[in-house]
Amino acid sequence: MGYYLVEGGRVLGGEYSVGGSKNAVLPILAATILAQDEVVLENCPLISDFFVSLDILEELGCQVHREGRTLTVDSRSLCRTEIGEDMVGRMRSSILFLGALLGRERRASLGHPGGCTIGRRPIDLHLRAFEKMGVHIREVEDIFHCEAPVLLGYHIYLDYPSVGATENVLLLAVKAEGTTVIHNAAREPEIVALARFLRACGAEIYGEGTPTIMIEGVRKMHGAVFTIPFDRIEAGTFLCAAAMTGGTLYLKGAQRQYMERTLEVLEQTGCALRYEEDAVYLQAPTRLLSDFTVATGPYPAFPTDMQPMLMSLLTLAKGTCMISETVFEARFRHAAALCQMGANIQIHGRNAAVFGVEKLHGARLEAADLRGGAALLLAALAAEGQSRVYGSAFVERGYEKIEDALTFLGGRVRLVSEKG
Ligand code: UD1
Image (cartoon, rainbow, N blue to C red; front, top):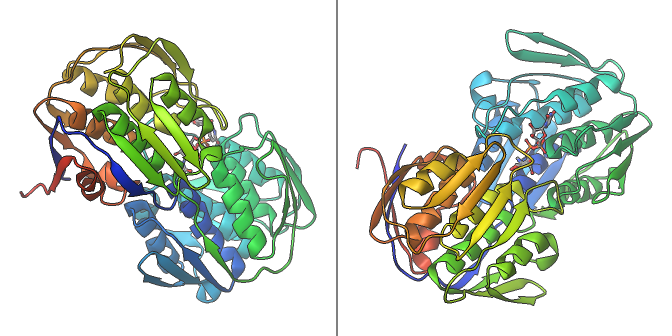
C-alpha cells in the first residue's frame, strides 16, 4: 500500500468538475445483469471499487468493454452464479450481486462482503427480506448459498432504512412475481439513480426517493443507455478542502438539491455559498466557525460518509462542535490521527466533541478506511509542514486520482508507492 506525501499550508481553489458517483455506479453495475442485454453506462468514476465490480461481471461471464468513462456491459453471456470469496472480500457492495443474480437466475452463491471497517455492518435486513420473498438461504463455511424456486412479491418492512438492503430488495423484486412494497426504504439519491436505471431497462418501480417504494415484477428487461449522476460525497470533500485552506472553489456538476444538509453545515462554518443549477461556488471565510451540533443519519440528514471530512474541517474552526454518529458505530477512527496533528477531539461512544485549534502540524498518519483517509488528506493539506498519509488503497476505492485533483487545485500531494 502506498502513501500520500503532502506539503501543507497552500490555498486550494479554482474550478473543478465533480465525477460520477461511487455509491450510484456500484449497485447499477450489479443491476446490469438483470437487463440480459447490452447496457451502456456513461460518466463512470474510474475508482478501484468500480474495477472490482468489472472483475466480478467478467467472472460471471459478462462481456465488459470500457472506453474512457463509458462502459458497455453485455450480460447475455452470463454463465456463472457464484462469486469467489477473494472478489467478494474486496468490496462491501458485492453483496448487491446476490439480489441481482437471484432476480435473474433464481440462484446465487457468495461469501461475506468486505468493505470499510467502520462498524459491524451485518446483512440481516437483506437476508430476512430475501427469505420473505421465497429465497432459501444456507450458510456453509461463510458462503451463502441461495436458491429461489419461486420468487414472490411481498410487503417488506425494513427496521432501518438501510441503503444496501433497499437496493438488494429492488434488484430482486423487479423480476419477482407480483407486487413488492418496501416500507421504511432508504431515500438516498443513489436509490433514486438505481430505480431510474432499472426503469430505463423496463422495470416498473414507483415511489423511489420516498419511504415507500412499490415494484411490479416484470418477466423481461432490456438494455439502456444511462448516465451516472455526480458524486455528492466527492463534491463535499473538495468543498471542505477549499474551505479548510482559505480558498475559493467553483464546483461544476454538483447539484444543490442532493447535498442540502452538507451545504447548510458549510454555511454554518462561515463559508459563503452560491448556487447554480449545475454548480456550487464556495468562498472560505478568514476563520472557520463552529459552535453547533451535527448528527449523521439516513438521507436527507447529514451523510455519515461526510462526517470524517467535516470533523477534519472543524478541528480548525473557532469554537466547539458536537458530532453524533448515528449510522455506524465505529466511525471515529480518524479522530486519533487528527489529534496526532494537534487537533483537540474527545470521543464519548458515538459522540465527538471537536474543540477548534489555531493550527495543525504535519505528521505520519495511517488511514483506516476510505473517508477517514480523505479526512486525513484534507487535514494534511491545511496543516503546517509535511505529512505522510498511509493507506492510499482505501482512498483509491472512492476517489479517482485524488492526488492529481488536489494538485490541480493548488495543493502539493504526491502518491508514493511502497517501493518508493
Ligand atoms: C451504504 C454506502 C455507504 C454509506 C451507507 C450509509 C454504498 C456502496 N455504501 O452502505 O457509503 O456510508 O450506505 O449511508 O452505497 N445494517 C444492519 N443490517 C443490515 C444492513 C445494515 O444492521 O442488514 C446497519 C449497518 O450496520 C449500519 C446501518 O444499518 O449501521 C446503515 O447501513 P446501510 O445503509 O445498509 O449502509 P450500506 O448499504 O452498507
